[in-house]
Length: 338
Image (cartoon, rainbow, N blue to C red; front, side, top):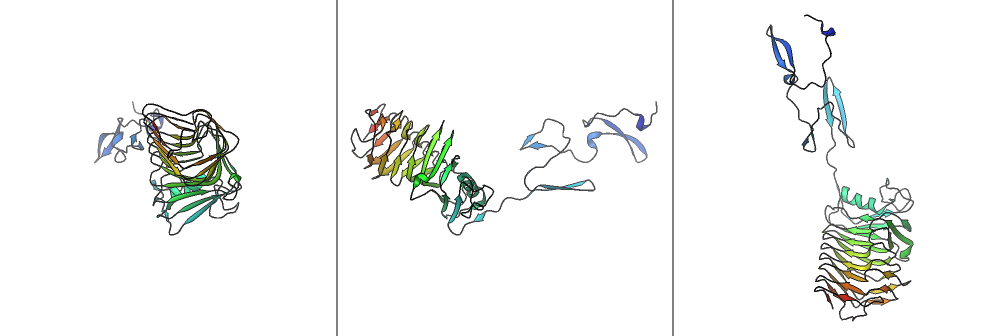
């Protein structure tokens, strides 16, 4: 029965590609599959994985992506890779409580400084070729509720996060459920100086892991949910200057998984008799801690040390009462206290 096209029942779309259509080719009616019309088939993928549903539209998203349609020909323009700024001199970024992470961080003003240390770290990681130049993140007085984590760095650098050298407790990083300062990136040195660090719920004050290196001085370690200084998985912590302990933690020194904490001839001032629930110095897997010729002033409660599983705690002959605490220290399963 002959029908006008306008009278036919509408087909279900999108077409599966197996439908047969009639065309006139060279004056002769012939059949053709829908999949053979309109050029070659296109396979749509999401980050390399074929899409399992029929493709009805393509939406390109991302900063700066544009698309133009000229007579049915669509041109999509995707910006190229970011060209990194290559440093030729040392660089300082500023962080202030009245700053904004929308600023560029290059001026010590409310309209120039960042609001968080992490924003400065991200800018260093994502936009710079550090070219071996040192970078300082100068943190203004005030309390900051976000910690910071070192990202992969291009060009190699030492990043110093600097607080108030005159009154370190004027700069406070106080986090809930996260670490204050951490570095899990080998080859990048993080220096943390002259500020107070404290955590609640969970999180350590300083964490070095996965080959990351952290050096600190002038720190006031406040109350901490986990460990004041946590060093694990081949991470390294260097105690490069005198510091203060004003709050308790599970342990002050926690070293595990071949981590290594080292420092010599430093003065540690303890205030308020903080408590350490595990021990002042604690390790439960092979690792090392060397804190020889330290002077600890003030008192703490808890076990002086608890080391096991072949870990080594070296005091340079400091004796059984070298570390603060009111409970004798212990060793087990091959650990050494020297």
